[in-house]
Amino acid sequence: MNMIMEDILIKPVISEKANMLREQNKYVFVVRKDASKIQIKEAVHKLFNVTVVGCTTMNVKGKPKRTRGIPGFTASYKKAIVRVAPGETIQAFEGV
Image 1: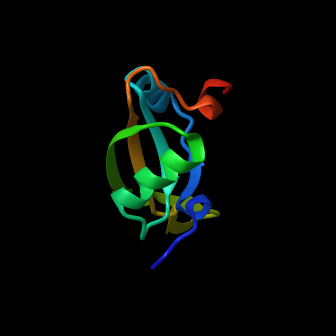
Image 2 (image 1 turned 90 degrees about the vertical axis):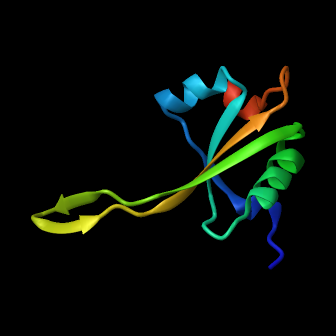
């Protein structure tokens, strides 16, 4: 299946742990569940014009929550940690 690059990366993850990873040239994104590592690397390369060295993906399961006494789960999603070449940065993250 041929996906559009903008559709693969859903949103960046802005958290304390993700900010610590930025010091190691690693950036965290929420991605489509059916996206492969190769597609994620190409999307980051084309959208942000950086050299991607590596990509790690993980499926995050939803956590159990209760809303008005009704048990349920938060949504599950796929997360990617993308490592870029030393000396390169993604400017969209640096302005945050």
